[in-house]
Image (cartoon, rainbow, N blue to C red; front, side, top):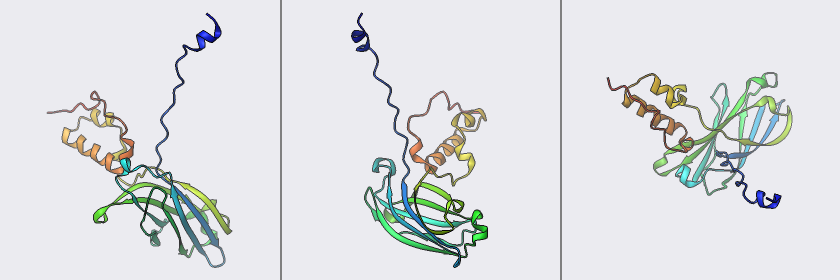
Amino acid sequence: MSARGSSSQLPKPFDPEPVAKYGTLDVTFDYDSQEQKLLVTVTAVTDIPTYSRTGGSSWQVHLVLLPIKKQRAKTSIQRGPCPVFTETFKFNHVESEMIGNYAVRFRLYSVRRMKKERIVGEKIFHLTKLNLQGKMSVPVILEPSYSLSSAVSWPLENLACLQFSPFFVVAMIALRIEADPFQLQAPCDPHILRFNMT
């Protein structure tokens, strides 16, 4: 058999599914060490999950200065697949000597009717990455939110091994979906959920 004939029978290369996106923020940091203030400009968001995954088309970004959590801010609500904000927020009393202890947590929310909000993604940006003077524009790639209890992230097979009641396991699955509804890509293996009915 010729090389040409054998190559025509080779299977098609496997194309893995693209990695789930949780949003990418276009952010500019402007730190003034003399004034001990930090300006954060949120320009836009890209790589937002589709409507079928989020159930929403309106977006808002929340910011909080860590670890104190007393200085908070949030953008206006914008619509569309690539919302543009171009809003600047000021955080005061950010000492240059303690810059390594500070971080800004970004959270992207999907805003629905009746003011319901759902976290799409989040990222903690440590200020050790900043220039101590001047502006710096960076893409902030958001990740799944892990704000709920760590028990929510347990694998389903671990829950089954602990022989919880079926009602408890169902509650844990519901919490996992609430924490990150985008990770439930495929139906659960029926062999994983083995309930102890005693």
